[in-house]
Image (cartoon, rainbow, N blue to C red; front, side, top):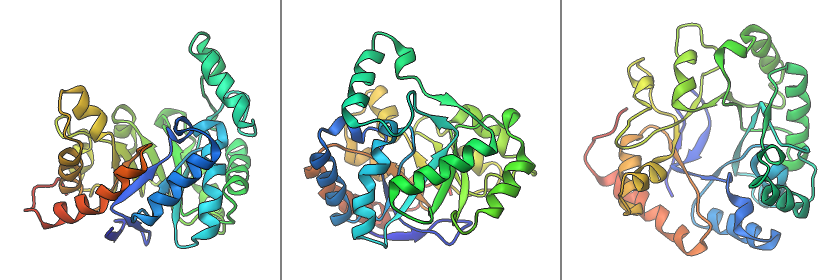
Length: 273
């Protein structure tokens, strides 16, 4: 799978990034590990995770892959935290998720935008990942009105030994608050986008390239489109400058992604950037 240098950074990533938000739903630890290994074998070199994904399980699952392949880059996040913490065993996570269908408070994430909590979260994420440094550290769905920008910026700059790059991971509703001239927390933006809604055009209108985008398949499926390879090829044509986060629980589908990248790269220019 072709790799690119992410705009506004020195971070080299695969054109598709493997998202681990639903990794816990794949099955047991061996099955999850086999899926991650197969993703790497099929060209994925960038993996996206967060402490809240599987209540810490996704970060722990990635540690074996990261040890085996130091060339892999990983993004994790800060700001959203798991109910019960991120040290819960998988069996308890499963029970909490099941009970949360009846009592949502048992599985609902909480937010905390204090730098003190963020500092501890970074330490805990690095321990779970088995790394001394994270390639990309993203503020997870921050609200611009709740962030003490200068305090966060000073702290992130002080963590260069542990944080190679930082930015924000936001939905379309929160994106606008970080696109003004004084947005030093958003040198890298990971945001939702779709082929019909084109939510990431908010970046383009500010003269910024698309960097990391996600959400294309879910949006298109909701709109009645079911041709997933065609959706993903169109997503890559739209985001030619960056990478697109995808996920699957089926190993056999992983073989398709490199072919989709090749087809998108050969197609005429029609992207947003």
